[in-house]
Length: 185
Image 1 (spheres, rainbow, N blue to C red):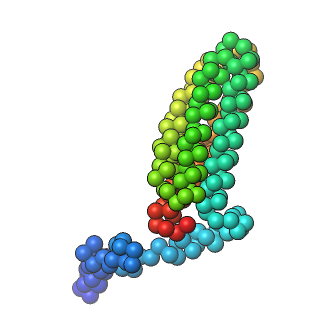
Image 2: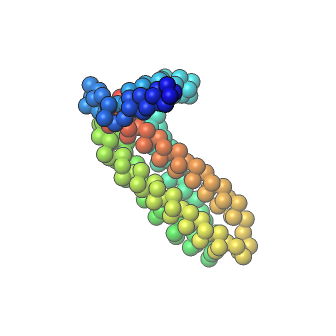
Image 3: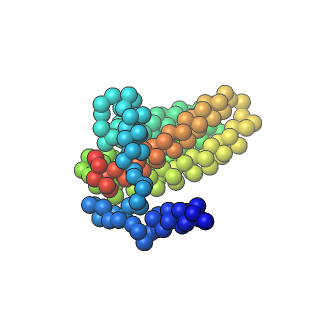
């Protein structure tokens, strides 16, 4: 019976009715603190950050994303000059490669000026771009299936790299957006 009462007491303490309001106006549950998690994350990332701030790291990520978009554009232009089947792959891929550049510029501006809402369109765009890149990859592989070219492995490698980077960039942008909203940066 004593164990049941202890369980009921701990459930009552964790009830939303017992929330405390912290100094920033947010609610926090008793016994649940986010600071150790943030400190653990900082200790894990500190060798990789080389002393830079998360803002600067996010801007570096966005700069790499802009360079990646330009390299995809060059790849699509080279593919378009390769022949009749590759022309369609390059024709579809070139606008997709150029499309994120204004959003990347807006996100860099938003991070530098502490305006987290300017990063949100890029996050949505990256989700859309990941889906459209998957469609472009499927279309390109179908178009190149019977073609006498060695472009398929390069196309597959570029797709894998782009999907990995899109997912990582979305995670970094969501984290820096949360930091900007909470005023930690």
